[in-house]
Length: 139
Image (cartoon, rainbow, N blue to C red):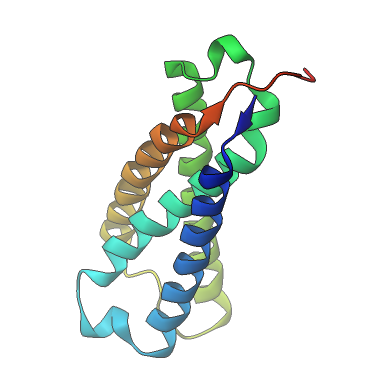
């Protein structure tokens, strides 16, 4: 299995946009200016990371008969949820070494994980959408 060239380009572009938006959010105080910015950016960032990881790694790992199955969607979505959990741990770690107060409490963390999950699920469906059969499957 492989992914379409457009799928890979889209995944890379969305990831680059996520990086830029995160940098702008921190450097321009957008998290403080707009209450919804954190939620939208969490969902979008995990969407972009999951789509990127899915197109980067799953083309070689998926068997052709499972490439567009619910199992593939779930595995890719779980990858994104794990990325969101790692993100939350990183935010907690940042709060331990800097005085930024990135994590605003349990409520904030649960909302972040919730929108991360939605982003991961959307990306999982997007990832399997870009799967194209290859003539030579190495697995």
